[in-house]
Amino acid sequence: NAARTQARQLYGYEYVAPAPRQYTRKVKNAQEAHEAIRPAGETFATPDAVRRELDGPNIDDFRLYELIWQRTVASQMADARGMTLSLRITGMSGHQEVVFSATGRTLT
Image (cartoon, rainbow, N blue to C red):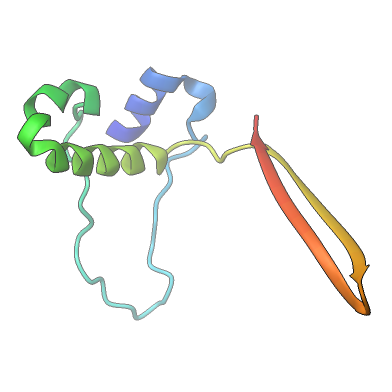
């Protein structure tokens, strides 16, 4: 799989999912609307490799290619690991209870 190979080369083995991810439809009788737009072939160019060709007046083409490439490679990478911290503070304002809440996540 080109996406898995490229993810290993760029980021290392520990960032690639242990087994290839295969996506299926969620509803048994659902019709597929259309084939997804994705890089094809045994290898495909990184955004940096095609930047010269698609930069300048074709900047939108470059941004689209970069988005498709990023999502394709990300689809075969390991799940993100991190820590989530949630904070909830309650108090009174006059006769009404008020709540302040915040959530943050740190990727490790």
